[in-house]
Each structure stands twice: as structure tokens, then as C-alpha cells.
Length: 490
Image 1 (tube, rainbow, N blue to C red):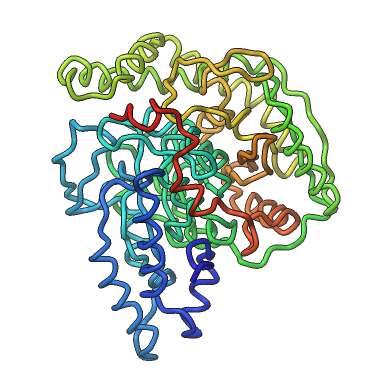
Image 2 (cartoon, helix red, strand yellow):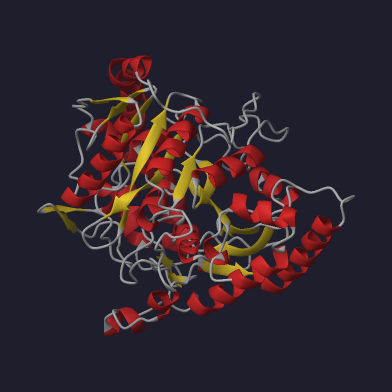
């Protein structure tokens, strides 16, 4: 039973089919563990434990009765980010403003997971309006990193990443408009996938925003592919959904002969020495596997990286302004600071971002992908971000004072939204915190990033059963927190 919380989805389904594990046993083990760590890690928003237990019984009966049709995810415990609509459920988007909002429709990608038999048992926490690279709010309190309680699991899909690392879900979902899947995946040592724009159908409210994607978060590359295959494909209610549906194979050719470019810092970021060391170890492993690996120089990206965040900040200022002016007494303390940042960008910045994006694709990334199968870089320059960090607070990385936005290396590839990006672990820092890398593919070339990810996972198997995931004792013992961290909650 101790192995069940961190079991992969692929293995769980195999054991369900062979009937040496029941969906009831798995959800029971996960819920028991979740109840023990909720007070300290706090990965969950609303919980549906009793309902999920009954659904697991229905799935168990299907596996017993050979005549019953099984969904591709039948009986798998699923946690869905609090910002994602599900009909008849609350999605607060991390805000007390929405505490009574019940959705009238389900996000089409989530609907496919549920129709595929996934067992929704909880919603995962996010910061208010999903607008932080940490995960705390007045609505849900502070979510902490299972690897160390004073550190953030990242944002905005921090609850999903924390739940996976803590072993309190089998699969989860996140959303990503500036790195909100990939940054938490790096912080917690799990896998996150930002699909290319149009791959996963979206809700009407954001289907025409190319920055925003929904995607899987898992502990293995194969599990992410499994979820992607269920979620993706055209949808009659999303005009922007791609007509062509692809299936990621569970058998990948080796990467011998592939051409991979890499950059330690994208010519812009200050990357911690230990993060760079682990990144280079992963690069060398890919080289040992037969790939042709070349370090490239990417200079002159400072302004386009700044504007890749700024364009989204500009689009956010209206709803942030409304929240600050209409609900000053119930919003989280950091929301006025978010508004201040958003008001620092204007329509000229938005237009300049679009113009520069085309220029840099023509001069930098277009030629790069003509000659290389993928680009690799770190995901976060340093994972040592406090659990209650604000957007403008400074962190020290290699002697530089930087904000968490300035150390998160993801936003550029939301601007280049047609590129699939797979984030996965690269190792552990000197302080025993996870760090990660990103595999950025050619536009709409999902299969290649999964092929490279699977190869790296095989060489550096962080998610095998003997992996030293955070222990239950370390996640329930808060002796390492300061007095303020223990009691100065929302």
C-alpha cells in the first residue's frame, strides 16, 4: 500500500486490468494520505472524497465485468485546478470574489478526461486569479512544497504540482499562460505539458487567447502522453481547436542522430550554479544517448522576454482594477501590487511585442528549428522561492536580486504559442530542492518533445518506484517552519 500514492497512471491501469489492484484501493490510499498532509501542504481546494469513493466502486465493477466498456482512464484519481470550469461545481479561481460561483459548463478538455473514466476527487489550489508564480490566497491559504515546507510549489498550478509530488493524486491538470504548468512542475520535480495553441480545446472565455493553454501534470512522461491523447483533438464548440488530432505513441524510437540545441540561460537569465549543473548533466545524458547536442548563442532577447510577460500584464489590468476597486476588503493582499505591475504596460507595449515576436522568429527561432529538432533550456533559474512570495519581492540568485518573474524562464514560449513545451525534472539542487528543464519543439511537433522526454526519463529515471519522494513524516512535521510561517496564515 505504501507504493500506491506515487504509482504511475500507466501501472495503475495495468493493475486494474489484471485485477491485482482495485480503483477502490487506490483512491482509498490516496484519500487517507491526503487527509494527513492537507493541513501542512494544503494542495486541495474543494474535495469530493465521498463521491469519488462511490465512483471508484463503479469503476471496480466495470473491471470485474468483462462486458462493460472501459474508458482509457477508468478509475484513475484525478485532481483538477480550481480555475477550470466543471458544470455544477465551484471554480473560484483562487478568489473570495467567486466563492459562491457554480459553473454552468465544463471545460471541454476536462470533460474528455471525465468521459474517459477519470475519477475526479478534488480541485487543486491556485493563487488569486492565477496571477502569481507562488500559490497562496485569502481563498485557500498557503500551499507549500512537499520537498520543503517554507518553499513554494510554484504557481499558478501549484496545488496540482504539490499534490503529485506529495503522492495525493495519480494525475492532475494545470493551465499555462506564462509558465503556470511548467514552473510548478520544475518546483516540485514532476512533469508538465504546455501543448501548442489549439491542441486542447478550451472554454469560450479564453479559447481566443493564444497565451493560455490547459494541459496534463503527472509524474511520468508516459502519463502525460496518456492524458494528452484523451484531452486533445477538434471540438465543435471551440473554433480555435485544431482539426488534426494526433496520438502520442507509448513506444518511442531512440534519439540517436537527433539534433538538439540547448541554451543555459536564453542569453538573458541568471541561472543558479547548481541548477545549471543539473541541466548540463541532463544535456550530457542526451548526448550519451546518441543525440547531436549543440550549445547555441541567443543574444538580444531581453526586450522580447520582458514584453512576453508585459503583453499579458496589459491584458489583465481591467479585471485587476475591478477587483481592487470593488472588492478591496476580500482580495488577497498582493492583488494591488499585481495591478501596479499591469498598469506599467500599455497598448504600445502590446503592439511592440507582436511586432518583435515576428522579427525574432525570423531571425532566431525559425532558423534554429530549421536545423534542430528541439531546443532545451532550464525551466526556473532557482527553486528557492518562499511559499508566500509576492510578485515584486526580491530573491538572490548568484548574487543578483531578482523577482520570481525574472527567474522563471517560460513566458517566451507562451508568446510562441504554437511550440509544444514539455517540462520535466533535471535533478536536485545543493539544498535538495527539485529543478527542471524544458523541451521546446517545432510548431505543433508534439511527438518529438515526448520522444526526447521519454529518452531522458529512461536515462535519468526520477520517477521509478524506488525514487525518494518526500516522506509522509517530512510533509506532516512543520518543525522547520518559523513561528510566523506556522501561524501568520490568511
